[in-house]
Image 1 (tube, one colour):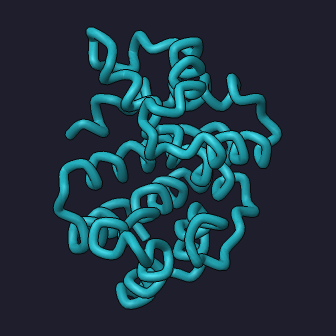
Image 2 (spheres, one colour; image 1 turned 90 degrees about the vertical axis):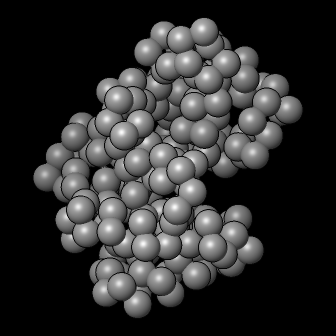
Length: 185
């Protein structure tokens, strides 16, 4: 599946600018990580990132369950479905546990990109370009800040990856810096 095909599917089920932006950010971050960790499959990683919340706007109470159904109906491969829906493991009714490094990154990055994005909006620049790990660490500790971003999921994601939290923060900030302009469009 191409990124353009995935974009059409995403837009079929999502209209809210916030959801579309979040999908682009996660997709871009996944693509940046893939270039380092699995370069021959970078587009696949980006597609998985783009489609991970395909159902959330319409079916938040059945997230990842309806996503699987919608993507099957669109003819999306089982591999993409499994990977995309694995980000909800332990939080939704999805049976797919993140196993591949791509899935573990999606699990952590889905929540973390939200936290980092919210932290960036608090800066005068409203950008990740000048955001530092220390700022994200501080916001991570403040449970009231971006309360919808699960600190437990982020920490579990880092642990599953075998990374320290600061490493996950740093690498995700760098990825978001790289894709910031593209994700805005």
